[in-house]
Length: 225
Image 1 (tube, helix red, strand yellow):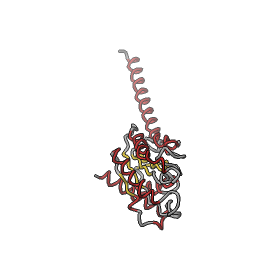
Image 2 (image 1 turned 120 degrees about the horizontal axis):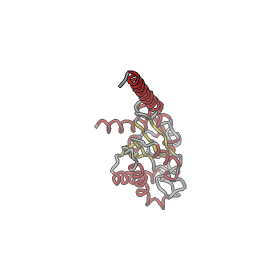
Image 3 (image 1 turned 90 degrees about the vertical axis):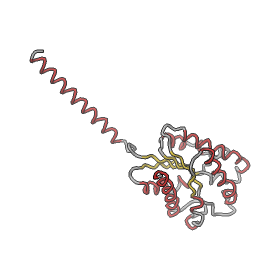
Image 4 (image 1 turned 180 degrees about the horizontal axis):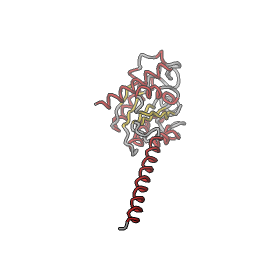
C-alpha cells in the first residue's frame, strides 16, 4: 500500500469513528428526552375516587423521582359491564394499557353499588376478572393490586352503603382470588375516617392523602419482600 492510500484509509477510519460517535450521542440524546425512560410506571385505574381526587398525585409524591404515576380514573365508571358507564368501554382503559405500566392500581366497585344495576351485579366478579386479565396480558407484565375502595359513609343514597359493604366488598375479594392478585384494603384502613369525605363518598384532600399512604405502604412493602 502506497503512502497516499494509507493516508486516505486513515482519514476514512477517522470519519467512521466520528460518525459512530455522533450517532451514539444522538440516540442517547433521544433517550434522555423521554421523560418515562428508566422510570417505574404506575397506572392508577378507577372511578372518580381516582380521577377526581389528588390521590394519584399524592402517591407520586410519596413514591419519588424513580416513579411516574398516570391517572386513568373515569368518574362514574364501574367494573360491571352491565351499567351505563363500564370502565372498559372508556378510552382511559386503552390509554392505561398503552402506558405499558409496571404497576397497576385498580380501585373500582363504588359505582357498582347502584340500585339501578343491582339486578345485573351477578356478573360483577366475571367482569372484574376480565378487566384484571387485560392488564395481566400486557407485555410490560405489571404487578397488579386490587383495591377495596373506602367505605360509603352516606346512608340512603346511591351508591348504597349497605350493598357496597355486604355485596361489593366481598366480591372484590373473589375477583382477587380468581386472578391471584394482592388486595390493598383501603376500606378497612379508612373505616373511621368519615370526616375526610365531603359527601360521604368522595374524599377531600386529606382523605386523598390517606388513600395514597395506604397504597404507598402496600407497594413499597411488597417490593421490599
